[in-house]
Length: 304
Ligand code: NI
Image (cartoon, rainbow, N blue to C red; front, side, top):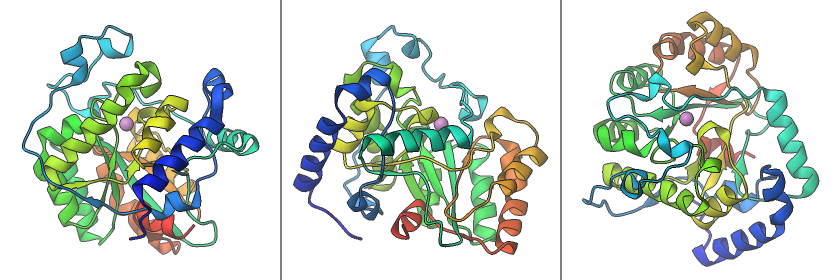
């Protein structure tokens, strides 16, 4: 694992944020070319498991903004779409990338892998899910397929055993916030709290901290970038969102995913969707038939 000193990373982050500047917050747009050092800093940090259990800061603080009036109901599962996912067409992601590159916004980000190699990454968001995660893991184990799980801290606290299983089976973990809130809609001072609480939940479960972060809904702004950079996260987006959360039907999700397979693809799927479990064997088999190899986000980042 290639590692950069925290001091160097912090100073890079401050310069980055300063460079991004006021214009960026005004237009609420997004970061840019991944800094090379960022995509190299992959893998997991070692850490000490904490026994303290956190509760949602939002509940404690009683904030009353639009986003905070709808905390995840602990009785429901992420597959119930408590915080609706938004579909972002690939063309929109590409336009955002070009916009950021034109303006020279730089922070540690991975949107795709190398276009030269037939490596692709499966990512599963919003879990762990009490019913479907174990089924996903079974398929991945049977097919010897590595994946990356972007975990919601609150779910981690509910199902730490599933997170341990993910690590034991060789998968990578990522931070997807504690409450799965739109980070651009909460007070900026709470963004870091969302990141930290998810990090702590993962540390409690498996004793390590993830290096990658994915903002819920793919929504981020200059404040989110600042907090992610301070914590040395590499923000991880995707090339392919087949929209499994909207439940368009298993065949549709499978076909959309296969239609968009390309070198370096990062495929966005979700833990709590039965159709996703059902298409996974066919998706993996057909992808391999076309010559693609599945890797984690860390491995994909190393090939850039
Ligand atoms: Ni999500």
